[in-house]
Amino acid sequence: MSAKLRLATPDDAMRLDRLVSACHEELSVPMSEEDRLAALSPLLSGEVPGAAYLIGPPSSPVGYILLRFGYALRAGGLVARIDELYIRPPVRGRGMASEAIHAVAKQLRTHGLRAVEAVLPEDVPEKLFRRLLFREDGGTALRLDL
Image (cartoon, rainbow, N blue to C red; front, top):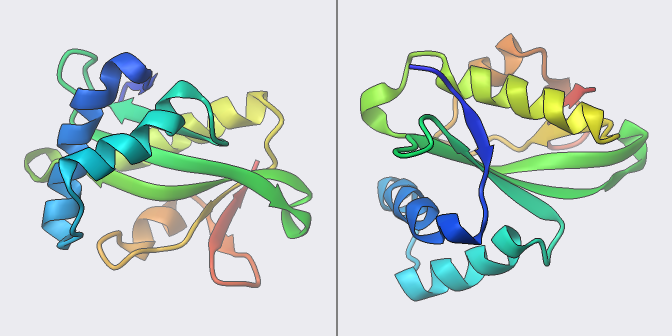
């Protein structure tokens, strides 16, 4: 299975919400569907500095990456921070997360971003990011310079 990426739009709200719901259920994050959709809406419409990418086939994505954008002097400019990364359990271990992170980094580089950062939640193995050449940034995150 390929880790095709597609930037999520407002039309993807329900599709993305199902994935976020599955992720949050797995991590025991209490959030109602109404609250999730309210939080996703400004992200999907471009009202806030961030992006959501769906991973997998367009008609039936198997995961997502949520990014927020900011500025980090330490990185030399604009950065993206991975806030959430999720792949459905039945398709984990096939390299899709690695492919997706690599593809996102490549796209972000073309838009002038300087780095991708990841603060590792308990559910994401550090080795995934180390394999992709993320390194300590001197703070609390791992960083991949673009």
